[in-house]
Image 1 (cartoon, rainbow, N blue to C red):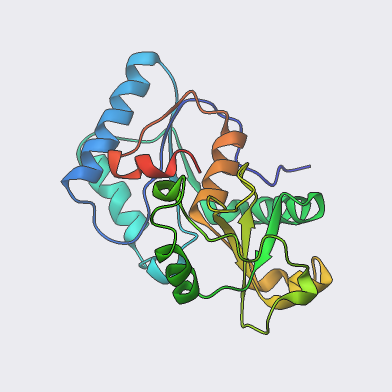
Image 2 (image 1 turned 90 degrees about the vertical axis):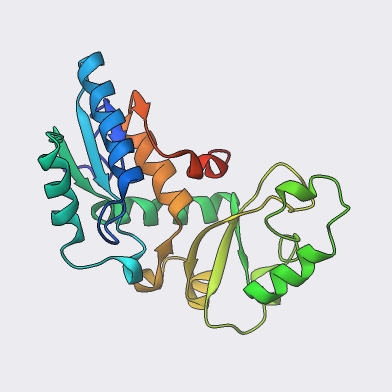
Length: 214
């Protein structure tokens, strides 16, 4: 049976987003990851992170591959993240059943307003959320167009609970009934794919350092 997740290739992983032409920073990161893979005699895996579909540009993936080839950077394997969305979905349902994540109906404006009042609170510098929906049952949520699913971090306040996916509100009532509405977050999809890939090294720009704890 074919695996739903990323293949366990190991190696050095570079994961660009096909949202436009590479700039010099993208090419620098690609070059470093490629050279590392050659030095360590490991496969160089390029995984295109295309789950943010509104930002994906037609032809960008092909152009990025061409830009890398022009510098002699040829992947040993090319993966496309959206191919593994069923795996992201199945683990979301499992996480809901296990109580690891919970539904949140707060709008972005409501989240920002609540966070503005936490400036002097402990761990405020790591705040992602006010914790408002953490203790609520699904039936206590207000009527909204979409639900954000948040990961239960160790702090009971919920201040660090971040979003792992969005779905329609029907999912929060009826379990796995509305697959088409599922949109995984960058953090959720990458964590799953990186785990499944069993990579020896992950090379990315320092501007993504803030995402590492998530």
